Structure formats: C-alpha cells, structure tokens
Image: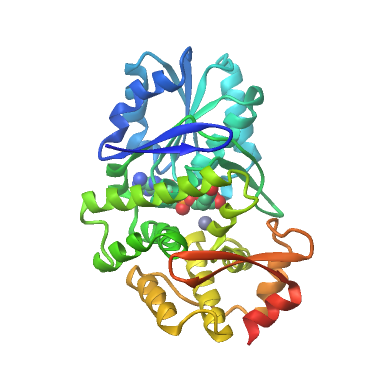
Length: 355
Ligand SMILES: NC(=O)c1ccc[n+]([C@@H]2O[C@H](COP(=O)([O-])OP(=O)(O)OC[C@H]3O[C@@H](n4cnc5c(N)ncnc54)[C@H](O)[C@@H]3O)[C@@H](O)[C@H]2O)c1
Ligand SMILES: [Zn+2]
C-alpha cells in the first residue's frame, strides 16, 4: 500500500493507494472519524452492484451503522435532487455532526458525496473511495465538490476536503475501456504540466497501463502525488492550482457545445492539442515537443483536435465560471513538464487561436 499525504491549508489527510486497499477502510475510518456511529455510503447504479456489499461489510465490521443512497449513474443526475435525497436520508437516520459520508464511485459520485457532506449540518466528514481512473487521479483529491445546474457544470459547490481517500486499484478492473481512456486525459495532463518521469513511464508502457496492476498502481500514485503537491500549495485555486486547467479552457467549451455528450477527458485532450498547436504557431513551443505530447495522446487513444472554430472557443470561454473579469487565464505548456498561466483578453485569445 502506498500513501500520499495531502497538506491542504484547511486540512491534511492521507490518500491510500493499493490493490485491495478497501480492506483497510474500516480501521482507517475509525481513526479519522473518532466518535462516529453512522455512515452513509453514496453510490450509483453501475458501481453499487459491484462494490457496495464489500464496502458496507468493511464498515459494519468496524462497528459502524451503515445506510446507503444509490442514485442513477451518469452526469445527468449530478444535481440538487439527489443531494436533497442524501440530506433527507441522513436526517431520517438521525445523523449527527460526528457521523460521516462515504463516496463510492466515479467523479460524479465523489463530487456529490463531498457536496452532501459539506452542506449537511454545515459540514460533516467525507471519506472518498473513487472507482474510476479519473476520480482516483483527479476528482477525489483536492476538495472540490459540487453539482451541475441547467446553466452549467459544477456551478454550485464547496471546497470541502475529505478526511481520507482510499484508492483500491482492483476496482479499476471493471471500468469500461472507454471510461479508462477518458481518465487518461487527466493523466497525460499531469505529465505535460509537471511530471517528466510520468511522461517517460507512459511512453515506455506504449499505450497499455491496464494489464500490469503494479504499473497502474504506480501511475495512479504519481498522479495523486502531483495533484497533492499542487493542492498543498494553492487549495483555493488562486495561483498554481489553475495550471491543472491545461486543456480545460478550450475543452470545457467543446464539452458544453456537445450538450455534455462528449466526455470530459476526451474534451480536455482535444483542448490540450489545440493549445499546443497554437503555441507552436506562436513560436513559444518547439514543434518536436508538441509532436512528442501529441504522440502520447494518440498512444492512449485520445484525440488531439476538434473542428470547433476559434470564435466559438473564445465566445464559450468568456462565459466560463473560471473567467475573472475581462481576462482569461489560459494555461500554456511551452516546455514539457512546465505550465504557465497567461492572462489574455478576449481579443488576444482569439488572435492566439487564429494565427
Ligand atoms: N472535483 C474535482 O476536482 C473534479 C476533477 C475532475 C472531474 N470532476 C468531475 O468528475 C466527473 C467525471 O468523473 P468520471 O469520469 O469518473 O464520471 P462518472 O462518475 O460518471 O463515472 C464514469 C462511468 O464509469 C462508471 N464506473 C465508475 N467506476 C466504475 C468501476 N470501477 N467499474 C465499472 N464502472 C465504473 C460509472 O458508473 C460511469 O458510468 C465529472 O462530473 C467532473 O465534473 C471533478
Ligand atoms: Zn478535468
């Protein structure tokens, strides 16, 4: 088992990563939730049939009274109705401020479980058990929680750090191939913005990190370490954490324009490819480096471009919630392993994309 300690300004906690890591959940939960009597497991209809019994037994074995809330799988259910369902379930079961929530699922689940915990009784503890690659390397670590509203994704939420994250690598065995590939969008992003070792490891694995569980565990560990280091420096997204948005300014627009039918990780890959090309045209990124990064994306079956126009990207980006004032913070990688935040006006961003 490997451990990454996340030292966020508001809270420090461990991320435990390993095969069959879920087996330590009961004991670890007792340590981080002293005095807790009840636990609510939040999961969804794809993941619950696979892992709910196992996780429930683990918590019951440690002496907790366990109830569950299972919602319909999918981003379309990441809304206030399900959160209200979780609040009501906890209230009916007599949860107090020392009881806790467990998020068991992909990023949709961990974001919602975290938000329900952040808001119930003005905040109770949450333990995350991510089951998708994306949730392991990204969503479950760092404390961003939230839900979607009709006007946009993740528009309502809270910063609420988990008390513990348990990443059971064995859970990834049942993840559909295309969902695994979506998670690789964030994995390659970490490599490009800050982790040359990860980049080399991914190149060496030649497009297959699934068949070797030890390698997969190591790669998840490297990604969690990267995310933890960024969150440790800038929990509230005022500086370095923004570099995690590489590919996202453009990717979010592609995602929204598709009515959220194109998966997030795929759109991020397209966004990274589009920004790389623009950097090469601007003369700030060597063509060889861009080719190396694009080759890695292709190796892991990710797309590198999209037919969206520069005008549509700029228009969409100006409506994004991450925009501050009239300028956009665009994340650039001009040297592999290093990201920079570049402030651009609408006009500058259009020029950057259109040259
Ligand atoms: N909080 C953050 O910092 C952060 C970061 C990135 C993404 N996110 C959010 O994460 C969400 C996307 O996460 P996701 O891609 O995990 O989506 P998801 O939760 O919808 O999971 C993807 C699919 O995989 C299935 N699944 C998950 N684990 C499985 C397993 N072990 N076996 C079989 N099937 C499994 C799910 O049922 C679903 O169909 C988005 O809502 C996004 O906004 C949050
Ligand atoms: Zn992302």
